Amino acid sequence: MASVIAPRGRGILLVLSATVIVVLILRAFTNTSFGGGSVFGSTRSMEISMLTYNIWLSDEKIRERMEALGEIVEDLEPNLLTFQEVTQDNLAILQEQRWFSRYHLAPWPPDLAKEGKSHFVVILSSFPVEKWKVYTLKTSPRNRTLVVVETKSSISSAENGFVIASTHLAYSGYNTRLREEQLRESVKIISVYDNVCVMGDMNIQDKVDGNVILPSPWIDAWLSVPGNTDNNGYTWDRNKIPFTSMLKRTVNSNSYQNRLDRVLCKLSDFKVKDMRIVGDKVTKSGVLPSDHFGLFTIIELVQNMKHNHDNSKKLQTESKVYFNRPAGWEKLIE
Image 1 (cartoon, helix red, strand yellow):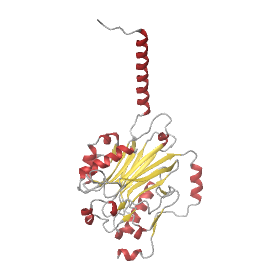
Image 2: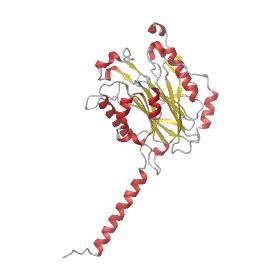
Image 3: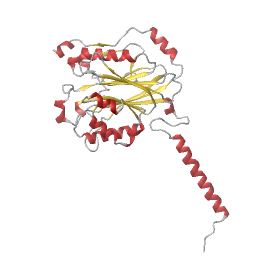
Image 4: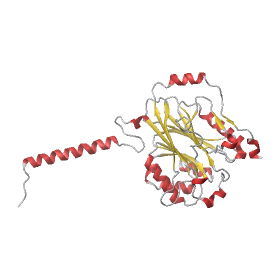
């Protein structure tokens, strides 16, 4: 005998069904895009998050390391990523991961294949890419490059969009003058933009390079956050790296602690909200993603910033990047 549902029971079921449908619709609209924040009034819709990482060209535990890196990306959901020391092998492993397809890759794989280098720099953007360009630095004997990507973010108040750039400067103390010239050239190229950050493994070594002096309104994002100093911003620390057997073969093997990686910004419509080091904790499988740590940065849109920057330009005392080297630095590279 078929059961009969009372009218009151049917009414309750209809209400419950309608409630479930409404909840699902709201969730769909308020969680639309990976890394982009929600649509309705979330503070994240006014922010841009960025992760930069030298992911290490070594084959040492490459799959475990790239999986650890993928977990960091999944956890942070950055809008923009810049990777250095990318190889065809570690890139192939990253492309297998679920999060990778949510980003636009620049340069595109065919262009990467043409370069024929052992390692290169890439940028991944969850925002639509307006255009991108790879500059070969004139001051680089090994064809070091600057990758520049113009994005179209959902933050419409920033009239000229947001530009992200990445580079990997010359390593070792012997190349301090070359490194200075490469950074100077990179900043000059992208200074035409109003809202731009250049980030990556700049191999800045305090014992020979000293303080990096930037022309206003350029800032070192790490040092712009209260409480951050050179000494608590190390992205290379031999005391924390588990790949002891590999250290003798790394280019920074003589450096125990350094803030090698930097995020430098020129911002007209944004300010740095937060910044932190990531990937400095060994995973359960006993690895770090790289021999470097990553830098995760959040910038936020700020209204009426233009007036402030006009004032800062009047106070500008430097016209180009230079290294304020410490006394006796020459002896360290002889």
